[in-house]
Length: 445
Image 1 (spheres, rainbow, N blue to C red):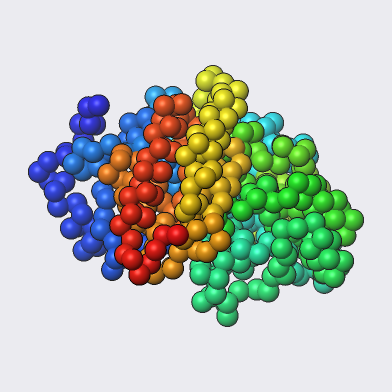
Image 2 (image 1 turned 90 degrees about the horizontal axis):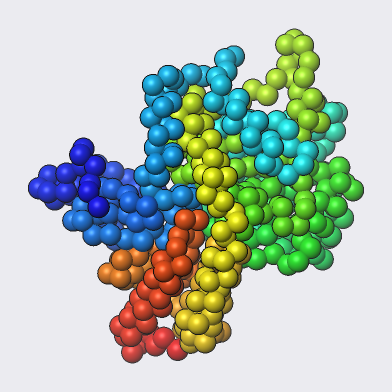
């Protein structure tokens, strides 16, 4: 591959890592124990570092890149949009790209979702849904509905509202004095029934990642869980918020995870893959019934007083429209069943009997491989085995990022069968190499 003309691999880039360490503070990174891997280019499903080494992008640049890097359709759409309008606010104005994208999202979304509110990240998409749900009940006179229900170990983003409905202690415990109270429920049908029986009268909304909890470690929900949630929300007058930031846009094999069980939520939160992974763009879709609750004269102050400077940014919307075009033109969804089956088969071959794999959790192309000293006991956290496996993977030409000792595989939808084999086989090899290097004091099994 030829690097873009504006990228230099040598000699200037030799100082990129040192310059990074002098200036930057990275998210979810303990910088005292980290050395930068500086990526200077992308090529299809691969990332290229400052030394020209290639890495299969096994986590889609944090679960966002759908069609590969430098896809010509997306590149051309952004360049075309640059020639007309790079940004204009949606506060009191509009523009064609946002309108067209909104129309297409409504057409694709589960039935009943007819209004699109743009934001700039998955966290803010959830934040919007939480505030809309709360205000919906306030406008309707049901002012006692001031609580939310969420799953244990939930993750919905890092702004304070989304952290409040999150439930991962490692990420969220420190901020507890700043958060509003949220009721928690285990992802079981009986626990869900009990939670609604006890709290249904005071809940504004139930927020949930459909089918699978991503950042919790790819935790799967039991069959019928989302359908029961929809039924209970309807029975108790509670709004259902589906956080599809991670699960949306083909990740589970359908455009949205809700489609697997024919559930329409009251709010659909999307981000990450919305722009094909190119630009920060998110959206919250909701029903006409919710939208109409906010209508009135200005003096009534029913307006939804929330917004973002880059809401509906034309460049992001152009990228999203191009991504949806790729779905249609390259028949992306139709290609997924074969890839999903190939991934499942290879995972079984390499890990089903592995002594250091506690469990494989998978939904579509979303995979979590939970590691342990054996099938019952975890590794000591001090060993950071998941992180070590992902670091070792770089020597095999694959880039992954773990969730603790859960190794996450979430490749681009454009991944090929050979690349799927590389992804799984390299992960097996890296795990074996890390386990072999453990000290006798910390046996692997």
